[in-house]
Image (cartoon, rainbow, N blue to C red; front, side, top):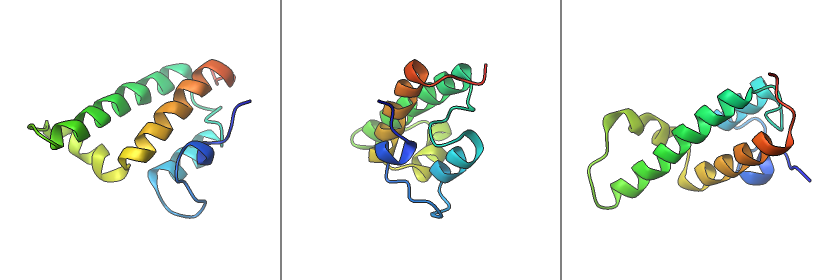
Length: 94
């Protein structure tokens, strides 16, 4: 059974985070997000996780820094898991 975004991340209502913005705009299951939008977030989050890995021992491209500053490693993994689940299980807006 599909779980809401907060199950996969540290999102707490009222925290003012990017996760809150996503839930407010797209719903607790990101059901108002199209599959294309979900796929885009998957792409950005995988790049984001790669950027974190590069910080541990390599150079990081500047375009990835902003996402890194908004979402923690753990929440990136959780959001990625949620998006993949929602792509498969939750009807999208398209």
